[in-house]
Length: 358
Ligand code: SAH
Ligand code: SF4
Image (cartoon, rainbow, N blue to C red; front, top):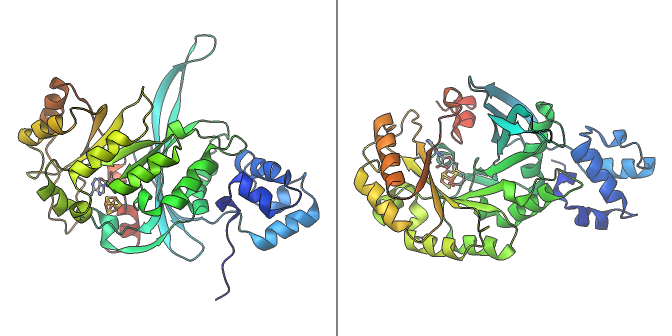
């Protein structure tokens, strides 16, 4: 098989400037790709023909092909993309209604967009509740393959280039297990000549590789972190997330305390609620204690069952009771509404469905 060309989306503007001559063209190329949504190098009108041909011969412009697209009743759209090597990953576009006042003080309604992106094909972490883990690990996504998910969703939904959106690294894979490509993608997203998505609008969700949380913090990229905690004692957490043995709860809490956080913001702790496993009030009590010294916010997630899983979806009452307990004891707490539940929007579930494993 002939070697696959890299995608031009893999390059930060500075890296691209080193690849081409003269370097100032990198800014123009960025603009064509991210702000004008061209689909071919030949459409880049102010770029000399020879350079366009050179780019064409060296790079892929769009590494993703939309394989399937499912829209949920609540407007959530889930995509399954094919990568250049035939592997597949998912991304989700979440749309929420938002009211804002414009500069004249007039109330305007528009959609607030959040894109949930994948960082790997499969995942090494092997959480026992997660469908992505079932297929094992295939490979890391390149930076460009991460960036392309947001670009494709913007293009496919006619979202204007200047429209702000949020990114959550909560799709398939463990972002901190692909740290270099993640960091480059964050930088590419931030570029004002590109998609211009400030790092404040980007949240990296991790299953808790504590040493990598430190590394990400040292890179000082300005992103938020969300910790997939899911359990308050190491025994249950190790059952759910086997690598908790090496990165236990205490080590994660310590790493979070060291992480550079915008003083106005809170660290998000995700807590996947599983029926009769971690949905009792004594777990809520331990959670309050665990997060005492942290400016935290807890997001409770309903476990979304799939055929073959030993775990069950918690009742609404137990979710509400859990939430009320946390709030009463001073923790901010939201319940993640089950957006897209009718299209199985939890990570890995569209891929599994499409590939016929259930
Ligand atoms: N690997 C990272 C990032 C994404 S995992 C992490 O674990 O944080 C994607 C998200 O989907 C996580 O918040 C995980 O808790 C959630 N998830 C996985 N399987 C789920 C299921 N069956 N029901 C509900 N949420 C699930
Ligand atoms: Fe990987 Fe996150 Fe799924 Fe765990 S929950 S297997 S870390 S993708």
